[in-house]
Image (cartoon, rainbow, N blue to C red; front, side):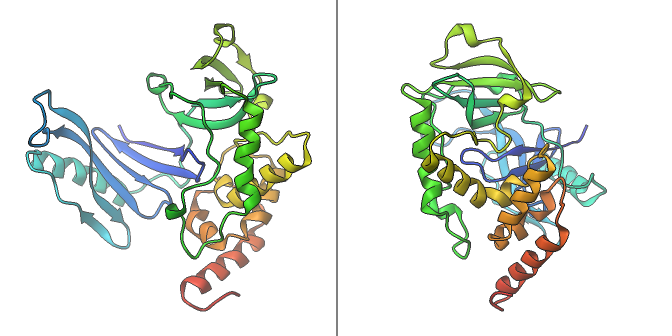
Length: 300
């Protein structure tokens, strides 16, 4: 069976990863164009390491795109090359054939949330996974707002200083020691509480309504002006990625579209992954600007 789905890139949040999965092989992509191929196989232990069982894990096989075709990486010694090639070929056949339209539906319905110290409600999303068996507990509940410098295109707009300040405000509101809880998101948008970090057992098994979970992955409810402005600055900068989320209401999507045009290069990279677009003309002008920049023609 072939599965088509997406998961969120956390932490920090940087949009979604699209995935195409078959038995023992998968392809993942942050933009829906260039796909990294991974094949699950037995990988021998490196020379000089203590003896032990051979690990079965996903091996990076190469990349594929409709324009450039398949580009392979070297296969480590000791791997069954024929078997790996066969699985990769089957995966490429799926990529080359008819597929559902992008974006694929989200599957990471198990979410780890940093909790507000005052009411123990979700404050900021830390992690998400597709299966309950993968809901491991981190040693610390720490939220990261912005990606490391090296992960951003040098030509892209830099995050404003206010956005970085959002981390401080969230950390202060979470308190010490910070508390986090896994939730299984339910079909109606609510969530069932599971285990957590520094979590009292009385909170396990609770059910929260859909409104308890911040739609933009960090709480928008702040009494202090400085905190409110910092979080809003972060949201404005993340807008091209936030538009890839499912379930946003129309006013929120309009607001994010207006902000996303200020990061035309990122908007251009991930525009195929939006479940909906409301202001087509607005986004089209930003996409033209991005194409001019990429061609060396400056701004529109």
